[in-house]
Length: 141
Ligand SMILES: Cc1cc2nc3c(=O)[nH]c(=O)nc-3n(C[C@H](O)[C@H](O)[C@H](O)COP(=O)(O)O)c2cc1C
Image 1: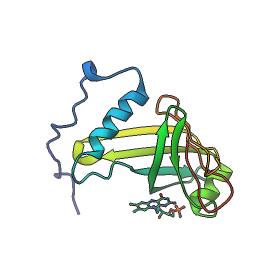
Image 2: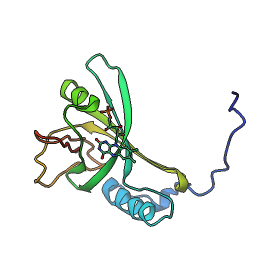
Image 3: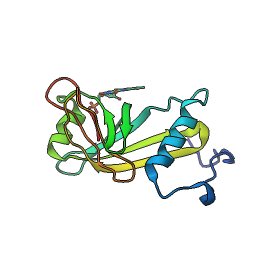
Image 4: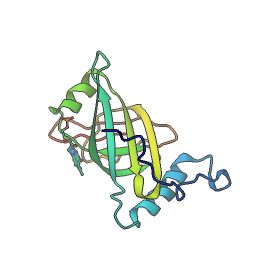
């Protein structure tokens, strides 16, 4: 199938530098609020990409559970493919595809395990991705 002719006209997602800030977390927070209130956008759904020790990549959708200046939190099973890959190679990339808004946010960094009870961290400004403590769930920072 030739998909080369498929193209939307992108007019909503223009990035006006005058509206940008040098504080990525503040910018992310503002954009997240806009995505959260946009009908049809699951703002907290993000693509998490990991790679095994040989560099073979894999991606999947995960839900963001929270964020603050210290990180972005998500949960997953340690025994999943991503859990095993993060044990070998703790670097990951997150992608928020707010397609309806014609926006995306990319975060790259180190994944660390955190206790499910403890607050989390990893800001888009100092991206590092975190995965959680022993148990069935994992979080990203
Ligand atoms: C909308 C949506 C939300 C999801 N949220 C999570 C999540 O928060 N944590 C998670 O581990 N998997 C979540 N999944 C499932 C993952 O995408 C994935 O299929 C699963 O974690 C196994 O991935 P892996 O084998 O690559 O580790 C979600 C899937 C969808 C479609």
